[in-house]
Image (cartoon, rainbow, N blue to C red; front, side, top):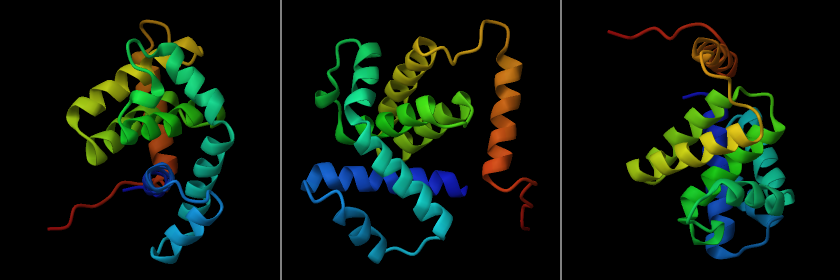
Length: 165
């Protein structure tokens, strides 16, 4: 698992903790990292995502709501809502390919929520990426796949993993 995936998962856990326990947003990361060992780069990216989502939450929730049919953001399951917030932030703010952002969000939703949540997250993020103009026109799927592979390679440090016998 790549460093960014771990950071996204940590950011999800921080956001979940903050919403579930209604704790202090400044103290939450300190408490979280006090009980967890992680490389500095993972901590920095997770903290960046956490703080950025909190700082732009109204904007992000508005974007999610604008493409969500029959679901208000505040009525979405807690995990799904925060997976969507992190991914929406990355779609509007980061340089990561949209296909990678969406794929990562789906995998995280599948891991921390359910297969139904993964499909829900996929639908919302696909609609959001089209709304903000990040989807490729029809016929450009190969370019999207190439960009996804290139970004994944950069996130994991390049190279292929060897299978151990």
